[in-house]
Image 1 (spheres, rainbow, N blue to C red):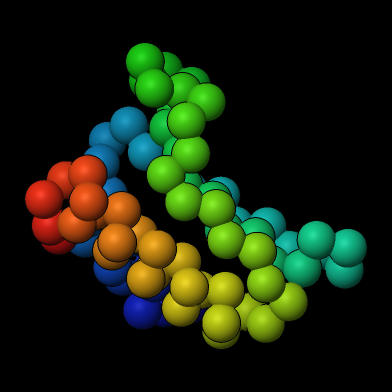
Image 2: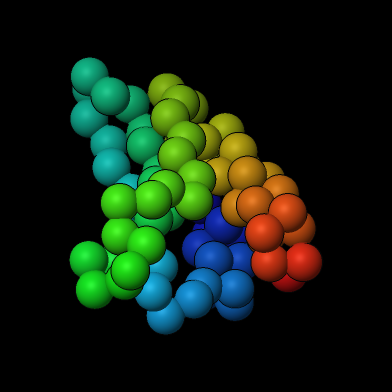
Length: 75
């Protein structure tokens, strides 16, 4: 989790919104989208769900890196 949060803090954009959620029904859910003030509000950058916390954060970091490579030209 710490590695993901450090990476997110390094690459975050001003219009992004990070949501981390956990419950016994949904497990761990990590979502990055756009703030309500953004013209892109409603679009999702990444959405990860897993019952294993460490795996969820690792998947989220990989997904964010892949998204940055594809849409932002790198990180």
